[in-house]
Length: 426
Length: 162
Image 1 (cartoon, rainbow over the protein chains, first blue to last red):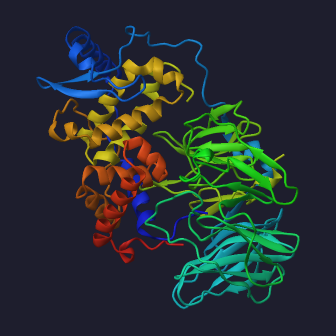
Image 2: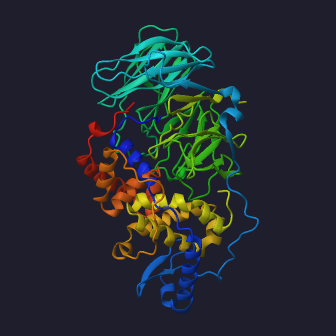
Image 3: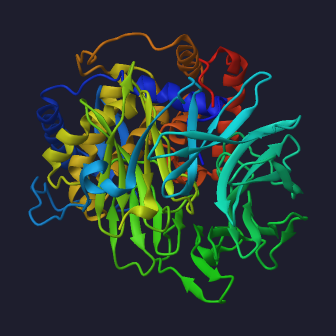
């Protein structure tokens, strides 16, 4: 989960880069003509006098080499049969998605709530408790605890559920909220990289420790996302099922503990796996396991039935993250069988190592000079619901998708949140 | 990509590419140079690239590699007279501080950070894009972050941390 990130250097860096990117120069109005002119000039140089340089050329798709030729750059490329026509009739569009505002596309699934409670307390949605109730929290700050509330969508009433306890030495504050079997669960992580799982009845009460000191994760190395690492935490995809909690430990391994409380136990045989979406676990990409081709979730198994799935990839394909049905690599999407490959528009708004939410939705951000749209792309129907983001001082902020099992997407616009109940989309 | 011709690609993606060039280089002239050079290269490679269905990835890879290449460092050719678009209101000071601190980094370190935190690529993707090992990506990133940390303090950043 990555959401209005806790201020760390990495988050600040991302914001600084995004903000300054907006100050880039505009393209020259005659850019295309300039490029075309220089292309033809270079081509002449190349075809008339660069035979020797041809020997330096790499393979067909490798990057050309550059040399210096009396002050003007010469582009050396692999041999080609001659200039190709600019138009390529018959080339199909790569993104099959068409965007429609979310409220028009999925009216039954979209809600807007104010960013402050009636008493002025600023809140943030965490997940949906049911189709009419949002779990929201306030955040305290110095000597002021965070509070969890149940926010009733039809009436706008917020009911206090509990105070969130933040123990000493907490490095990662309460996150990963999930609801099941009448309780709300979340976790905090200490500076020693062990985590505590907390819970409280949905109806309210005192938060209790459900699992103490879960096994420590590998240290987070300056923002490097390697296979199995969980963005923004040490516990991933906390899930409730059949009286038990399940989660992925950052870096690999699926763990379980009783909902009623008790020690964390590793799920046997999952040391190099992660929770994809309960009850599916997937193999982690691994440099030592070249047969997996550095593709997360290429091999899946169902912990309940023992069923297995594998994804079709050609040798050399890598850096994909596969869920139950879909595999993602940047804005590229393909199905497990490899028969369909397409692209979502814009820049993916999916945290590293994450797969499609509810095995179906991927968020992306599409910018034009006038506006920035957050797109919720439904991989099943190829429809995109759009949310127009607020641009303020050249800055656009939005939330990425939460964990793949979460039913809610929400993002803040000025003084309100738009909330999409992914489960309510038909 | 909805666009299929080279001309449409240039028209629709030039602004996004300029933004990328700008965060890579920190300089509007270098940004314009990087984009033009990469587009010229794409022009020649268009039939091959379009078959791979990722012309933009090709251009971005070209830009990143070009930017960190030795050859680039010695070249200074300003081909454009672009004026920046829109208003030039200053971003908040903390962002400015980081942006300025980025200028002190060697090109390769800066490129690694841009790919990680602007392009949001994994270290493996960065390694593939820059043609360096993953270990190098990690060491360059950690060195760069270490340097930035010296000039950056979380307390300075505007207070909307959640």
